[in-house]
Image 1 (cartoon, helix red, strand yellow):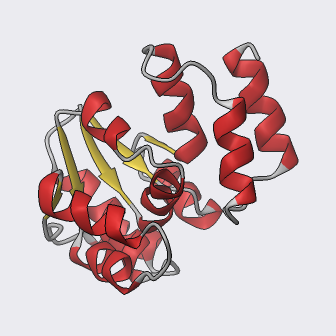
Image 2 (tube, rainbow, N blue to C red):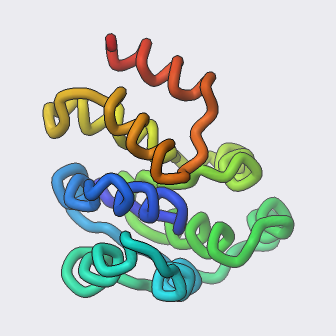
Length: 162
């Protein structure tokens, strides 16, 4: 499986010190140039981890041109989300798009692009035995300032059997 990510989920994984999950879950990890620019502009304690992953694990690739129908669906998105969705559509399947933004997820859904968010990725990692539990990671994520709603936390805990 290939993973294409937008900025937010990568920042969240870095806050959790769990960027290594990406290479355990996928054969390749890609981001578009705009996401790279957003990650390199990030300051904070997770910045060195992001920079290291950009050098060692994450590949930057420009997305293919979009057809008019897809362009219309993506027109309200910021450039990073637009490029991430376009890149995910231009790679050979199976491709999983990591995207937390609600409007971006809605656009991906309209285009039939498989996606999940950071919490979904953590659930996948637990199902595959790469992490023992999602609950402490969600608590750490929230305490580090990454917004996750109470409803998402509750649903994740139920799905994880925690």
